Length: 277
Image 1 (cartoon, rainbow, N blue to C red):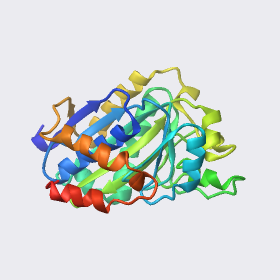
Image 2 (spheres, one colour; image 1 turned 60 degrees about the vertical axis):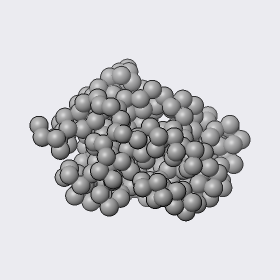
Image 3 (cartoon, one colour; image 1 turned 90 degrees about the horizontal axis):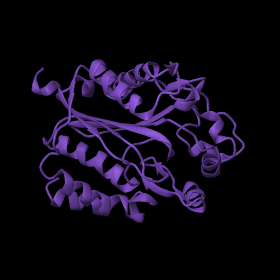
Image 4 (spheres, rainbow, N blue to C red; image 1 turned 90 degrees about the vertical axis):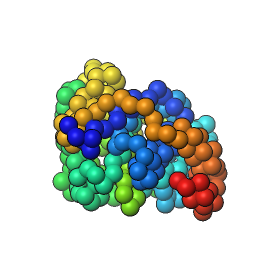
């Protein structure tokens, strides 16, 4: 296996919402600037949190989340809102050295989703890819449309006719990040409070279909990503400066209401450029 085929495997303990988002971005920025290795990262969430898409309006979801005592954090990736609670989150980060980068947005999305489908099948979930996007529907509560799981798009992962995985992507000039939520369990009451009555009915989760545990899913996903993308996954040390960058992003971006609520990042980007990141 050549160096370009060696990827880093990161299996993290449950972290806070700001930390989880900061670490994904730090790995992406490291690769963009020639530092570190491509990575598969698997992680969970210390407390329930809502992440919203890069360009998503935060007002309605923020009010609903605050009423439920749930933190809101804005992703650098696109898409719509996700309630992170009883789930396994994955992130795939690679640079232009790997052919995944050359596939384009849809091609990379499909390749990664196929790995997830096979991993879910391995643990007893009859998952499949959507061929075409679903309709928007006419849900009673407009807030449901703020949910990533409101309707499937092309190459989404489904089980039992409903979405079980919600993913989003961000591409830089030389690197890409795709991360997503694999629903493992479901707090229906909290989901419906945040996204509107009936929102949970549009979702599937792993424990509906199998008694396999979280650790089995992690092993299956690691194996299928390794096989599907043709890479060797190894636990490796962080790149030089990674932990400092994570802390910087956590405090300057993901704990900032200017970013999380308004999506304003000019000051953040200027600071990163001034630091040579």
